[in-house]
Image 1: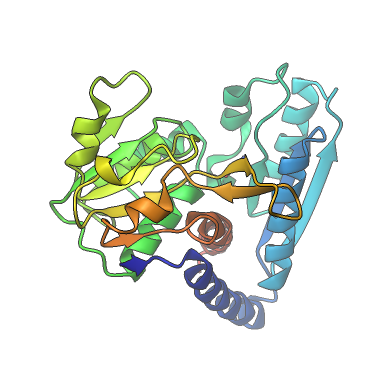
Image 2: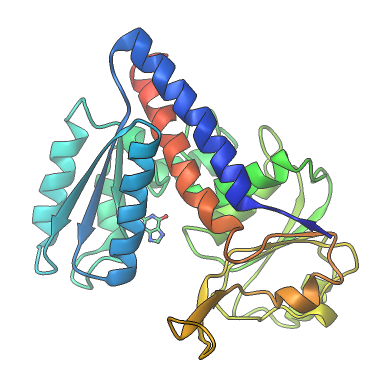
Length: 295
Ligand code: GUN
């Protein structure tokens, strides 16, 4: 079985991006800039944001993090976003989710200038993706990273049956559309399954490519999949493990041990999809810089 190594591919991609950033800097004297806004003190979100800032610096981009207290009003957050929309040194704006309950995420997604929306969460970007204009939009980083992995491993997608399990706005919906899309994408026949799907095993068993993003540890087991299936595991679940120093370990939505004996290719957790998400955020930020500067 082929292990789809997201850690390695993301490092290759970051090296390529660094070379591009360096050469653009030599030509224009400018570098891409990403600003991340975090509201509140969620430890997991703080970790993700630190990682994003660190990766920016590694590849020579400017990164700033705006930390706002959890009592921040929606209006204050929207005002901050509008300032960044108008700041020419900012090419990418990312508002870390989840937001506190009193702030409406959809309103926030709408406020980010679509041309700086490197998360691809603005309806204009999602709409462009649905209409197949990848050249005009930003694609949400996790689905985009998965497409990149399939491409770099030369995994045949055209005409295959892809089953996406999960229908979130961030992963499931953009993923399904990307797999469906022909130009610059996968050209698959796509089925989307979710928590209300009846007889979900039927669809999963008929998948040539199975993409799982539901947040349930070990949900997909060997008996559920077809021999030779390509499995992409988006889940990152903490499970207790007294044998480790921290007392827990990370596992995916797929039972790796069991399914790897049946699959032809598979992403591990950790080291599969996760590292690709940040690398694609950097790719989107560079893309925004190129578009804004006509490069
Ligand atoms: N929270 C978890 N993943 C993401 C992401 O990709 N973007 C944002 N903005 N928030 C997140």
